[in-house]
Image (tube, rainbow, N blue to C red; front, side):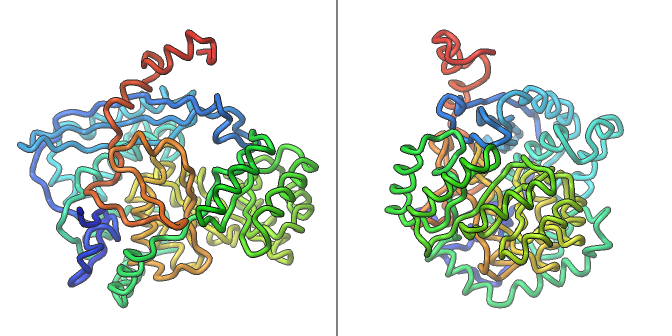
Length: 465
């Protein structure tokens, strides 16, 4: 059996054999070799046909990815694979942005990139012309994540990195009023204490997860009941329910699910940005009888003060606010934390600028003592985020209190090294890299719009372009 491994490796003197390389995204080797090419494909899966992923704002998503492959001249055929998640339409825009960014990547030596990763990150996010249409946000930032995810996949091998080297990957511009480089280094150094025990815990137990797969808004009652029944049998104890389209229907569906999972299991709610601030407070207050742990994205993802108002109003009900899956960058997360606008912070592996920016957010969350409960699901998000959450527990937060990671049981079969779930927990990955490599046949079959799957759906008039 292959030993666990992962792109991020916490710095330890002698990691346990079972999780030496997997407990973190920082298991890294300096690899000589020039980047000779970058390709990007528009890969889409017709999840809208079965209402998978449906919520109050996104009623017919087709889970998709701008899928990047970076080629090198290394003799062993070394390649890096990265992606960013989308919902179908608009993927072509992200693909164009990736192609525009490729000029900053192709021709560079990988060793030069990782030796000055902060400068490389800033180069990608500070292109003088591209920055104008998305200064660390929007389609350009999604494209940046895809490219950087591929670079991290390239870099993910076996040599451990020190906290100083890890800090050098982070761009602290705009966040030093909340977290300085010195504070970040201190957090990582303190994270070395008791690290071996936490590694062993992850190897034996995995990272706790919750499921969103049972309660998409477009599912029938019969489908909800079957999926909840199956999930309970598989050991799931935490369930997220999509809400926000109709209050009476939300009450009915929440009661249906609450009765099924029982009082000893946990329910969370997700409105996917549907409400105004006062509407959110009223709506969630009406659903408080079901004792949800949190309400996720209750209003505009950009409304930091609105989230703060909602947080303050719902606190007496024992309901927290969770958000972050559409938080543009580390600056917004900084302000959410400074404004006490969230109680559960949800990083995303593709919305932010890959590992580099996610590191800064994990460190800020530690300083502000806010639990991180990442967004996942989609295409490859579970595969990516597993590395971040395990690293967070082992080397940053040192805690599992009020922490869990989202899991959605869709599309993992298309990945060469799919995520492993056991007992409602993320188990340690066992293969090198960032778990981003898709099966070649899947990329070909689901490439939009000329892949066989899409051509067949068009022929059968099940979709329209």
